[in-house]
Amino acid sequence: MNGSRQERTGVVMPAAEMPVPPEPAPAVIFTNGLLDQDFAKTCHGLLRGSARFRPIAVLDSRFAGRDAGEVMDGQKRDVPVVADLDAFLSGGGELPQFFVVGVAFSGGRLPDPCRLEIIGALERGMTVVCGLHQLLGEDDELVDTARRGGGTLVDIRRPRETSRLRFWTGEVRQIRSKVIGVLGTDCAVGKRTTARLLWEAAVRDGVKAEMIYTGQTGWMQGYSHGFLFDATLNDFVSGELERVILECARDKDPDIIIVEGQGALRNPSGPCGSEIMLSGNARKIVLQHAPGRMNFVDQEGPGSRLPTPEDEMALIRLYGSEVIAITLNGEGMSADELRRYQFELAERVSVPVIRPLEEGVEAMLPALAF
Image (cartoon, rainbow, N blue to C red; front, side, top):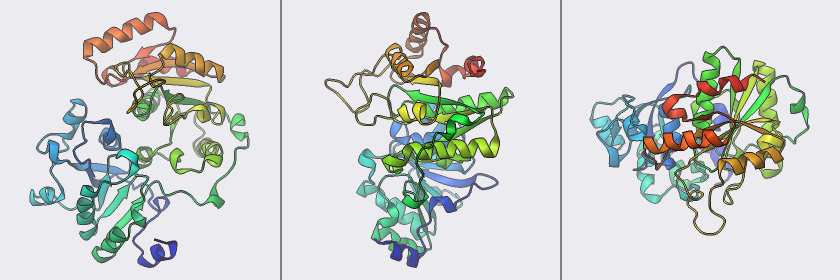
């Protein structure tokens, strides 16, 4: 579909035209049977807190009848899981304005069976917010459905116009704020969650701190500053990263700026992170690691094994940055196994080793004073 048709239908809204509301807007979150998996990390982020959306139900037929928080991490959050939108409405739920696709699918494309739920939302006049690489606003059937039903399509990953992108200039090296990057030894390892916990803990401790989002979930959580790494032309990634850091420093003048990482330095399917150190001038790094993983996500064979935290710390030093803390994701491990690993790693490295979800991140706050 071409741009002129989008303008004519009036049902495709740029994400930039959706300001963060004074109060989080009620929304149903669609996860399609994946609520307990990393693929649903967008939903997980919204359940843990958002200034933009307030989840009132998760649509997931596999876990219908349960509490969404308990499915996610064992902590009740009073957000019910229902089979689908029809079940939510038939159970007395009031139709919210927003239907959020809270899950990532393989290849970033919407599976055909999921189309029915989105069509049903558009027929009811809802705004469908989606962060997939597949742009729903370029799908003729969905656009036509939205036009007939009064719905709206918002694609978070619709790229900014090239004329609005900027190249890196080096100005980021002149700001007063100190930049901290939250990187990981793999993708989908919890970098955004740890960044948010660190930001919240710093603010509680009286530190003037801000967080920069770099992915779709961060936009949905409503942070003031950020951009989408993987929806930006490669030539402009460094400049756009610098832009949002400079804007944050100008608008908020924080003592520290925490930047959410993407991918991993060595993951061959998504190498990323050097930009945060080199272009974002993040000289202090929090490193997230999942010791229960043997290989990079969805990869087997030669060259697919995760690096050890010590090896990644050494690589980060070569970039001119320093790891100030290691945070652990306990997927695939029992609580005792994770604690044992934490203790053993702490014996080998000279920085705090922390289980963020289990014990918080306050232990790393002294490392922020630099």
